[in-house]
Length: 301
Image (cartoon, rainbow, N blue to C red; front, side, top):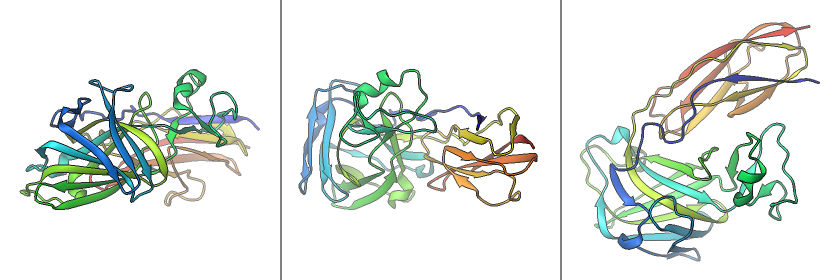
């Protein structure tokens, strides 16, 4: 069978208009942090492949309840009067990643770990320099607990994004999902971090960012395929600091309903006709308004 790729094009960014600098919690300099473990986890500042500055925070976690502890020498005020637009943002580099996309070949040998389909991220950029296979973290959940100087604790679990930028994953959590309300004060003194599986990762930057970037989209070109062709649909989205969810309706089972989810999906049309493929991109936190785009698919018998 032929493989036809139909792409709904949108400008893809990780951080969008959001930028570090609203509140700098860790900016690659370890003078304002003390590190330690939580349970059997470990955490330490190291001068190793920093994102900015001269250091990263290396973390070893043993699951969602045993991980790294970051204490701030000088506590930081993080709450403000515009919580709807503010996120605590972590830039994270995972030790073990996978490279998985339709049609991508992952060698179990060259540069690979002992787990089939997983590769050392240092080799990934070289081995896949001519491939558009997305680099994905093995961990899927990033858990954070924030503690104030008064002893108040807030926590949230975020899905690890599917995309990275040069190996760094932008994990952004809206402050309002932590339980903060407009007018609250919260002076951050400690951060605990965990992942859902035993893992090692580096944190290159932590900060509070303001982001009101809307989710936007523009439709791709119309496509012509044949019945029973394997048709790949690939979506990219701009949503600033938001994590996005992709919902597809292929049009052949009716104009409503969800036929598939994910950034990259595949579908086979069983009969000919003209179909409108609809993609709805939404904010997983439910804060921003979703964007919906369509493209036309003509299927020849």
